[in-house]
Length: 164
Image 1 (cartoon, rainbow, N blue to C red):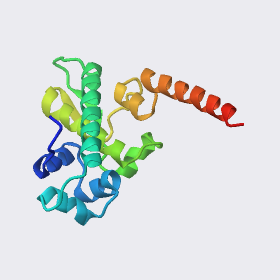
Image 2 (image 1 turned 135 degrees about the vertical axis):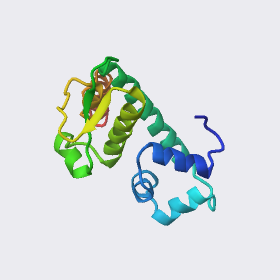
Image 3 (image 1 turned 90 degrees about the vertical axis):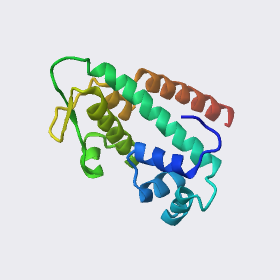
Image 4 (image 1 turned 30 degrees about the horizontal axis):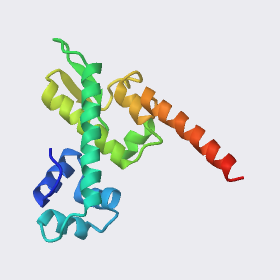
């Protein structure tokens, strides 16, 4: 992936890589009408720079989640199970603070793991691995996220104190 001169074909490829349909991408990423997103993907309208940045950011997050998830499922002759959420409503049962973009990222990671790792089966009743990076990340429990939240809390307290 390279940034700069993001074209309509690349936008469509990124959207599909992230498991988003056009209406979801328009609503959740672009905050625009479905028609506007379709115009970007058809090449009829120029893709805004902020959309390009957001799509690359999500793709980078997907790649990080894949890298970390690969570590959670070591290569072996055994087949590992990963939980697949066919609907957003199923997903939020286990990840109540997440949004549809998080659900689609989860699906993108699972799809990659199934297609590329060679030892993953997807099922809706796989055990929920609460020690996995993906689970922790979606629930904002990774070390990085916890430290970020702590730093943000300190900053907000200082800002509130300063504004008194």
